[in-house]
Structure formats: structure tokens, C-alpha cells
Image 1 (spheres, helix red, strand yellow):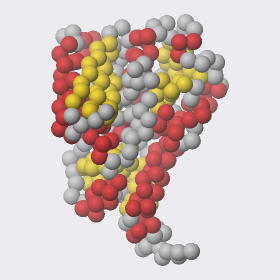
Image 2: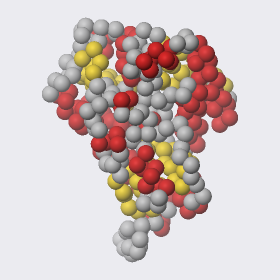
Image 3: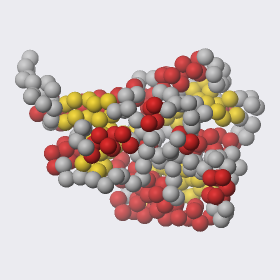
Image 4: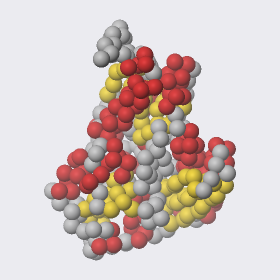
Length: 325
């Protein structure tokens, strides 16, 4: 048995939200750092620092009504920039397109399954849901795609951590819900998924299934640690999707979906925007070389195309109706 001496102070303070999923992702990051760097396997070398975010504090309102993107990252950004933490672990779909000055995003862990899961105790699939069935979801992206195919469903705001949503499902607060299968897998809760929905039927959120890790710009020590953990194919694909989001000026008021992945040595990209009621859906695809520049260009070009195809008053109408994209 190897006995390791404790270090005097943490070498890396890992910032995270306090939800069970966020903690699972922070522990995954901690374990990877230990495996790759002997000095970080010493007792006390790594510290998990829980930072409560606005998105964690306000659970009774839709995300779009309390500030949109940044609700799950802003306080972590502040803690990183003022030195309370050294790195921050994020679900990439929560990360705004533009980072605060002084911060970089050099690392993404290997991506999990990007698909959504159907959770229901009464029915085996979305197509079996009766008219008027209540779907609990905080995602405008899921809502718009659901209503496009099943316009008689009723979608209601449904927030909280994964465990609380599963509990509400059992209490019959709603008939069903949709969650990212990636999160369920990371918490060993995948058995609650009745069906995993193909991306052809439900296009995922930008960066769904990816974990990103930020640090301060110029922090060479943390940059060296994170460079070893980075999965470049994941990072390129996610940045391609984020360039699509940026081209559309997307936020939590915007039903936007995208998926970029490698198929037979080539990049396959699909992007979608929709109205909140699902009555208007615009899609586009791209295919090309699998390299960083091509992926960024594909996302940017696809976003510009859909923005150009949308009616002139479409964005304004969505904002006036309180639903955004």
C-alpha cells in the first residue's frame, strides 16, 4: 500500500454547482486529474468548492423569465475570476456563447450520449400519449419539437434536479418528462428512461452531453492540467454547435437545437430553430471536413441561413409573446 503525504494547501480548487449531477461531473473531473497527475493524487491536493448559482436558487419560474443563459454559470465565473476557485466544471449546454473577459474554455471531456430520454410511468412512447397529456419540461427546445409533432400535448414548466423531477413523475404531477440521457447515465439513473429518443425525432440542445472546464486566461498551471484532459473531437464538435448558436444570437428564450458529429470520417451537422408553439420549424444540414475551422464555419453558415429564412417579424413576435425562440 502506498501512503501519500497530505499537501499543505489545495493545488486545484474545483468549482461546481451543488446539484447531484453537477457534483457527479465535478467528481469525474477530480478523478481524471488524480489519474493523470501523481501530484494531484496526494491527500488535500484537490478541493471541491460548491458555488450556488441563480439558476439553483430560483426554481419556481421558467429560466427564460429570470435571465436566460448564464443563470447556472455567472456565480462560478465570479468565483473563478476573483481567485476563490482555480477551475470550474460546467454542463456545456449551460455555458453562454461568449465568456467573460479573463476566462478561457480550454477543455472538454469526452462527450456522452447526446440524446434525450422519455420518462413515463403510464405510456411506453411519445406516440402513445393521449390528447391533453401533460409534459413537464423547462426546455423550450423540447417543447417546440414536441408540439410540432404532437400539437395536442400540454407542456408545463418543470424544474429542479433530476431526482426531484423523477419524484414528481411518481407523484403524477405530470404524465411524462424528457431529460438528457447523459445526466441519467452519470448518476446511474438510466433505468428510469423508458425510451431514448433518436436525434432524428428530437434534436438535442447545443453542446448536450458535454462537460466543459474553464480557467483563468494565463494560468499556465491549470492550462497544463486541462490540456491533458481535453478531448479534442468533443471540443471541436461543441464549438461548431456553439458557432451556430452565436450566429442566431440564441438564448434560453430561443428554441434552438443542433448536433455536430463525425460520420465515416466526415462532419455531419444538423441545426434547427422553431417557434415556441411548434408551428414553425426551420432546419438545415451541413457536411464537410472534420477539422476545427470547417466545423466553426458550418455552424456559422447554418445559423446565418436559418436566420435569413425566418420571416422578418419572427424574432420580434416570439419576444412579444414571451416565449422567444
